[in-house]
Length: 168
Image 1 (cartoon, one colour):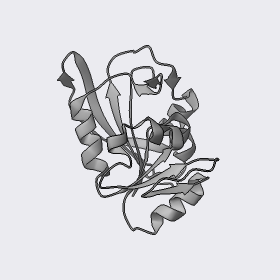
Image 2 (cartoon, helix red, strand yellow; image 1 turned 60 degrees about the horizontal axis):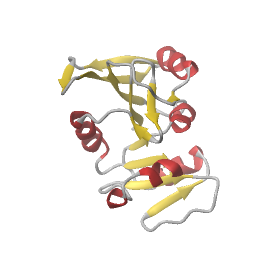
Image 3 (cartoon, helix red, strand yellow; image 1 turned 90 degrees about the vertical axis):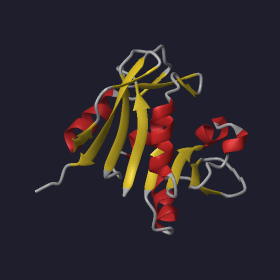
Image 4 (cartoon, one colour; image 1 turned 60 degrees about the vertical axis):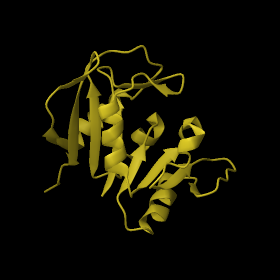
């Protein structure tokens, strides 16, 4: 399986100042359980934004996308999504694109599934996914699973699973 896993607010936004605009323990647990023992592909800035104690993400093969020279112990480096997917395929594990707008938008043509946490609130974010991303998501994928609405502290959210539509 090749998938993207992300959380967005009602405006399709994900970040402010290089941080998620919310902290939902249930969503973080969902992310951790889904991606455990898999390959995760992320942008270099995402990797560097992780707290040092979580670099590289434990119990996962970490691949960092970058156009620059970058070297880190226990991390594979790739300069394109295609190269990252080729390296990820060596391991025979599920592959997840994680945590950055351009990675989500560029990888949508390569994924079979999208795991999306929809936060039912509009945040003041500075990074939002494009309308084109959501148009492509809705045109080429269908919602195969949808959870009930959960609430944690004051935030309401739900989990959605999209599968790529099969062409006939």
